[in-house]
Length: 438
Image (tube, rainbow, N blue to C red):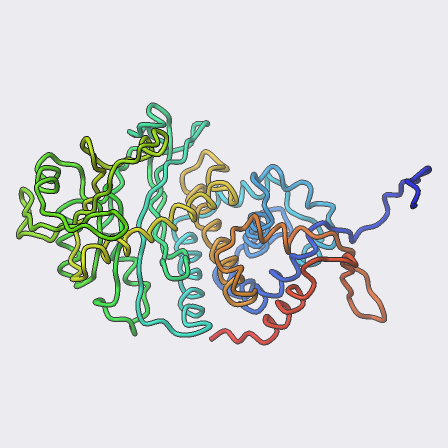
């Protein structure tokens, strides 16, 4: 039986230890994308009185987000992580004041350059590993509570967070592979649908020109329901399924429908209706189910209901059967998982400064980090990792004790002997080496 340690001597001399040994995968992947080279072309300035270029600082922020540091002031632990610094190509990790000063220095044109780089990378990687012929965009917004005095943090109406200052970003994800597509940081008093038409135009501008508008569909909740959005999508020729608001007339028409009962106990129907000020009648599909006897489950129903049924009403221009339209819309639930991941696995809820433009810059850096991780999962890891969260990736691959040494003139990263995911790790390295980015 092995004995426990009886004596112990400490030394503080090793400079190339790390508990983020798996970051070598992301470092190799970012090299394949040419990320640092692209950043150097977009940002040519250096921080005043420092040794860091803008590309160094953006890479530092991206890597710290991906390894799970929740706040900028927590990056101090990376300043003595020698192997991590070698992967990043820095002698010393920038301190929190340097990172904050850099974010506050960025201007609107710099943020646009960063977003443009993100869009170019997405467009290049979109057809990999195989081309797609359709797009499904999921729209949603999220309230981020602000506890300091950040610029444009406003009090917005939210039943759960009424009276608190917040930001209210608008987000779009492509549903097939849950890839982030476009985002906009907004003050907290912005309604869900504020600026949505220009937002959708930008989403479509980023779509490959090989995909026809008729092959692009949008899904959104009741916060986006309204004449302007519906008629705009009609003009564009895009499909849509948008939850209707619980107006009295819509509720009455839904309850008055003649329903067809399905084998699973649900019932479906549809009706034509022209809301006030709308130019023409539109198709509304109705799905209802009996209210469960379980009081806990019954309380979780958020759509309108009568004594026996809970109703779901969706306005759509899709010609499919009502049940198929409902099934299509129900898959939108994946965007809730993506937003939770941004809030809890990424630092979306940890706004770093009081300056609006600095926070917008950090917002877009975070979203670029989200997509880098998504592309890494899609192109380098086994299929079962495609829909896993960043927390799982960190546990399985990134947070890994390692030591960087030089043996026979070659850099060697020493990893644990009984590492459970060794095969997947080595396979990922091979895929990265073979990856060809257009």
